[in-house]
Amino acid sequence: MNASPLSPAQTPNTPSAPAGTSLYGGITNRRVTVRDLAAAKQRGERWAMLTAYDALTAGVFDEAGIPVLLVGDSAGNCHLGYETTVPVTMDQMTMLSAAVVRGTKRAMVVGDMPFGSYQESPAQALHNAARLMKEAGVGAVKLEGGERSARTIELLVDAGVPVMAHIGLTPQSVHAFGGYPVQGRGDEAAHKLQRDAKAVQQAGAFAVVLEAVPAELAAQVTASLSVPTVGIGAGPDCDAQVLVWTDMAGMTAGRVPKFVKQYADLRAVLGDAAREFAADVSGGSFPAAEHSFH
Ligand code: KIV
Image 1 (tube, rainbow, N blue to C red):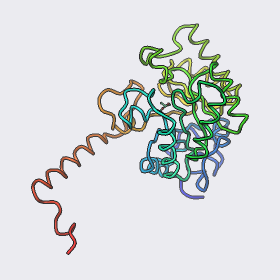
Image 2: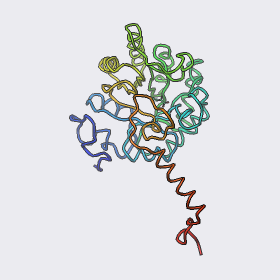
Image 3: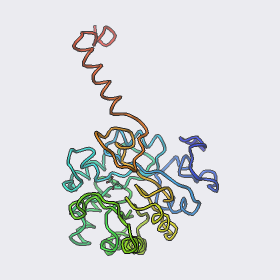
């Protein structure tokens, strides 16, 4: 078995993972599958998911052993310069997803279905999910909505499309929510979230993203489901955690949500490198002799 890309000390919560089966380092010669994620839930093994929008960055995360990469429609605000995820198109998601698939060998790549690409009818959803699978090569798709999306999820799953559901704060509904408020607060909202979670599991979703919900509620939902929950702003008791990579690595300009932990300051590092390059050029110290052909 090849060495784990993460040291044992970094391998979260894997006391009962049999050697060679852990998501971290156990799977080295093929892509992670929905069965691996189901087995990880059985073992109580937690895992990390990151977004990725290009081959280069995805390759870095793949080499770091991140088992699942989401080509999120957060590409809209984190990569393409839009204010929200709403304007993102199928053509854009297909292009970005294909790049992430090309840049990776081992991670399961999940392609996000953008706003308007699946709400019209289950047939429209299947058409667009098939595009992500056939043209981009993703291993699964993600779509937003609980009970309201259950019929669509069922049809996709019946057709052989693995579906990751996304409930709680669903950013494509930003205009309906009037912003990005925490979801599931109060008895009625909590029951609605529980019903949404059950409905998408029942429909065949292999995992459920819980975004911006109280930690206690996320813990209850996680305990009540047989499929893994992937938390973002949903406390520590989800089966997995996802962050938008630009938030996680400190590339995002300005404020990041409360639930983000910043693991690097890439924006400062890149800015410094660019300023130093510009200063070398204007000062005449770049290119030096070793950078020149003679
Ligand atoms: O688009 C995205 O990046 C997402 C994650 C925040 C879960 O949906």
